[in-house]
Amino acid sequence: MRPLDSRKAFILQAVVQDYVATAEPVGSEAVVERYGLRVSSATVRNEMAEMADMGYLRQPHVSAGRIPSDLGYRYYVEHLMKPVPVNRLLSPRQTSLFSPNNPEVGEIQRLLQAACRLLAESTRYASMATAPETDVVSLRHILLSQPAPGKLLLVLVASSGQVEHRLVPAPDKLSDQQMALIDRLLQERYSGRAVRELLNMKPSTVSSEMPVIEPVWRLVEQAVQDCVETLSQQAVFLEGLQHILEQPEFRQIERLYPLISLLEHPQALMRVLHRLGASGRVQVVIGEENPLPEMRCCSFVASSYRIGDRVAGTVSVFGPTRMHYEVATAAVEYIANALSRVLTYLSVSS
Image (tube, rainbow, N blue to C red; front, top):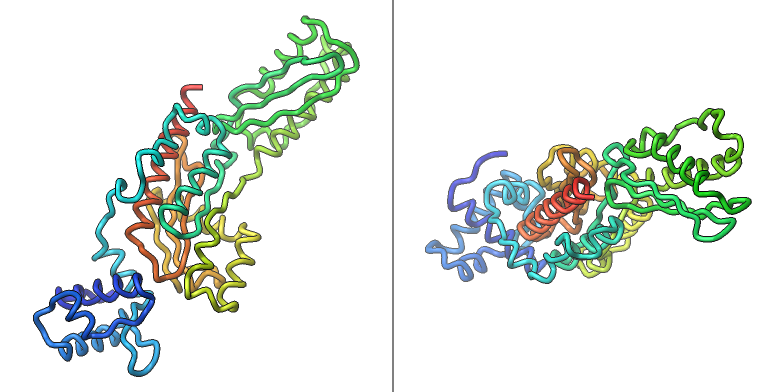
C-alpha cells in the first residue's frame, strides 16, 4: 500500500465520508465546496486521477465522480479513521444490558441474542454472534430432583450460563438414599468437566452399589448425554437482516441472493469468523479481501469475546463495502469487551 501525502489523504477521507453518506460518486467540485479546500477543483481532479492510478479510487462510469476502491477503504481504516466514543452510539439504558444485575445476563442465549440485536440497532447493519465454543465450556452445576412420583428433573448449568434440562421417567418414587446415590454419581462423573470431553464418553461401568438403581441411572445418564450434545452445538444468532435490504447495493438480486443463501447455512462464515477472532483484536475484512466469494461485495467487522483468558466466540457486523467503519469497529469492540467482562464474571462467581 503506497503512502499518501497530506492532501491526497484529505481528499480520500472526504471521498469516503461523502460516498458512505450519499451512495453517490463524489466529484472534485463537491470536495472543494464542502471541505473548503484552498485549491481549484482542477487540482483536486488531478489528485483524484493520480489516486485512481494508485488504486485508491475508481470511477464507476465516464464523467462520473470517484468512489473509493477496496484499497481506498483499507487505507481509510488503517490511517484516517477516527474512533467514535461509545456514548455517541449507545445510551446508558442500552449499555445496562451488560450489567450483572440484568436478568438476561444469566441466560447466555438471551444475552447473546440481545447483544446481537443491540449491535444491529447501533450500526444499522446486520449482525451475527456465536455462542461459546465447547472447549471453553464446562459443566458447573448438575441438579437432580424428583418433582413427582415417576419423574426426575435433570438440570445442567454450563460455565457459559447455558442451561439444559430433561425430564427423566422413573419407575417408582426413589428413596432419599437412592436419590443421594444418583446425585453423587452424577457429580463424580460429570461436574466440572469440559463439554467437549463429555461428548464421546462411554457408559459407566456398573458397580456393586448400583443394581437397584441401574435402570434409572441409565436413563439419567442418557439424559445427561442428550444435554451435552445440545450444549456442544455452537448456536448462531443473527439480527438486522432488514438493514442489508435497505442498502442500495443489494437491490440487485444477483448480489443479494448469494449473501442470503450463505446466511441460511452460516458454517463457512463461522469458520472465517473463528479464524479472525483468534487474533483477539477487531478485524475488518473489505470486499475482495473476503475469502468467501458470496461476500466479496460486502465488508464485515468482527472480534472475539472471551471467558477468562480463552477465546469463546465472536461478534460481528456485515454490510456493503460502503460502510461506516468507524461506527462498526467501535460498536463491535465495545460489545465484544462487554460480553467478555460479564461472561468471565459469571464463570467465576456462580
